[in-house]
Length: 291
Ligand code: 7UC
Ligand code: FE
Image (cartoon, rainbow, N blue to C red; front, side, top):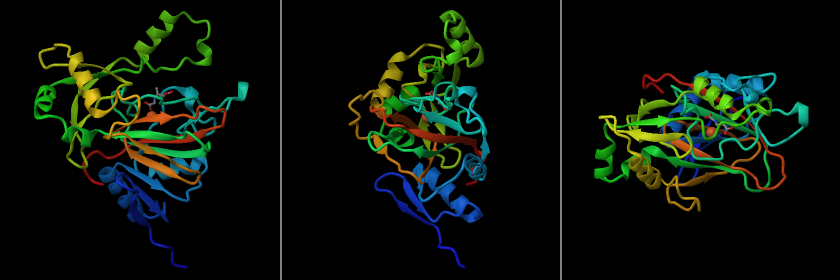
């Protein structure tokens, strides 16, 4: 039987929807990858993958990278990061309320992830979704003066404000924990503006959650520039009405893939007691420009 050909269509003014994706087709993988680089986010419909199959699919796009902190790991498939508010006491799997702040995944590490895959497992009826801001689009509308001011600057990123206390940290002195965070995840520096290797676009790669400072070429700290950039990109708007902010919703059977080089995101977690679980896999792709 001939399969139905994959269809990629615009979601609205942002991202694409992919129907009848065939994970065994090299052409489908390549087309979706291109769409993600160009349109930033793809929502694959009608996908039902167990954790092993999920990792296998993501492996077609790049090399899966396991999150450094084991409390997030799926017990059978540690390459799967579990975000879950379902508390079963001793048996708890995953971590609740992950990413409830503007960030790019692993931006606080020496190399951020290239692509993030999210496969929601338990979707609450209300208040569930992820906000996104496109930092390549944001760069394009910065004033020429601001672009000039950040041209040769470096940004510092750190996890310290959002590191989650683990069950095993109870009764530990805070100084010991802070020292451990410094040792395992020291702050990293990266150019404030990087060039997307697949699209050639400049990206103003800063986030409210992880970026702690901007430093000029002569070593001067420029917290004023960081604040200006966070404001200009919409990351200080707590009303979530800034025109750059998009809300991506999802349902059971969806698989979201986003371009983590250009997108900062912020989770919208349900305020109610409804259960919510999602699986995540993150990859490094080939950064040589081939899609
Ligand atoms: O629990 C969390 O919010 C996880 C966050 C600190 N890091 C996600 C990441 O991939 O960078
Ligand atoms: Fe995240």
